[in-house]
Image (cartoon, rainbow, N blue to C red; front, top):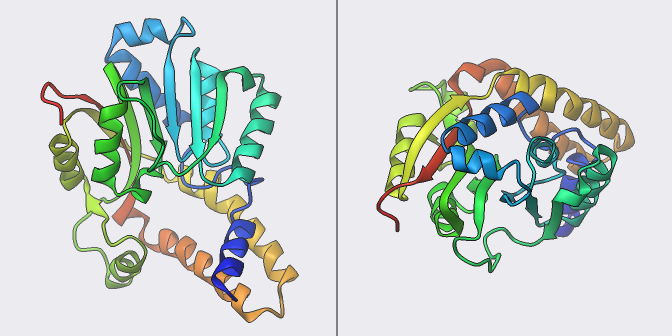
Length: 265
């Protein structure tokens, strides 16, 4: 398979029709949102006035975007670099009756060309790592308006000294992964005050993400039964799922809730 063929099949695996394209769930999104709004009564009032300006970075097919739109007034700029994901987001938004609140944007989230201080709320679930956690936070810091807030979920080590197989897997897949304390330090270094953080529940991985994904993998195995290269890519995703089954206590996604600190960058 060429590199283009591999990427095409990657998107066939992670098809826009899946409920989610990464770990997460509605209750966790709402918990993070409630925490941010509670930290700034003025922002909470703005969220009821249709004036709120929201940026959703790496929105994918929009599971969290739809959740946010259902609980906020305002306008959400939903950014992803794969148009079929945004098409599905648009379809879901129309079905949920919130399409008027969402503006899909197909663009590299690291090169948006947006004005500084232009958003009251910035959201990124499991996507900021594409820019690098610290690099992404620094970019977002410039985009936040005074009094703004940011919520980011990031993959972290939850325990020290993970088993060798787990450590080796993420050494290949996400070598920059840190523990919670190191991420808190990174957040502070980037000019934020940490308002709170919490670990996503295992159900946000298993029921919301991996179970539908496994059903798709089983279907693709039948479709490509004689294709060793595509089966190898399917096996790679299965390895990730199996890793979580064995070592879920050692790593997970953590939601970090932040506001700009007194000393900006």
